[in-house]
Amino acid sequence: MSTVGAAIGALGLVGALAGPAAAAEPRDNCAVNLDTGAFTCAATEQQALRAVGAQADLVIARTYDGADYTGTVLAWTQARACTPAYDAEWQWADLRSTAAGNLNNKISSVRTYNQCDVRLFDGLNFTGAASTWIDASANLAAIGDGWSNRASSIKFS
Image (cartoon, rainbow, N blue to C red; front, side, top):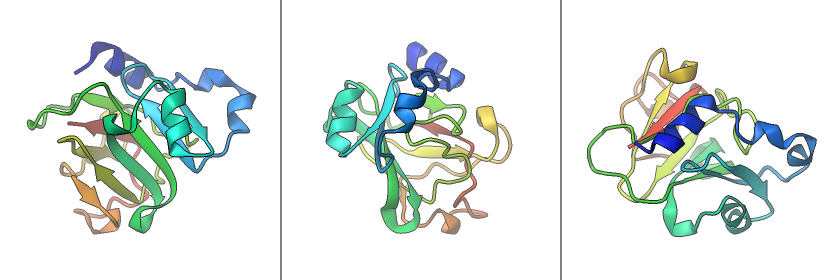
């Protein structure tokens, strides 16, 4: 796991410092750089990725607040592909604080890339029930006991 990414993700506070100006940005195309903790939204995903210092080929997952990969998209990026083992290489401890605003209990679908999967937790800081490792799901309600609009924290492997 990236030490910097883990520390920043565990804090879940980077970007909250951006203040009111960040709130005025469009929230449909957002990106988080898990290595630096930088996050933002922009008119296009490409603009958001550039703003956080990432490239589209470094996206490891996209979460959506709507089923069937619709609604606000948050592209999660890191500097390298994940390893095939389920070892939680990157994480975000508090989905109340993301580029897309408060995503706590609002993620409804997810896609992963670059050998990554995600694991969702219904409590902050990876507490409470946990989903299985998910590669992709157009409807998180169909995963396990139902994970649509349930996640409060997320891990990537």
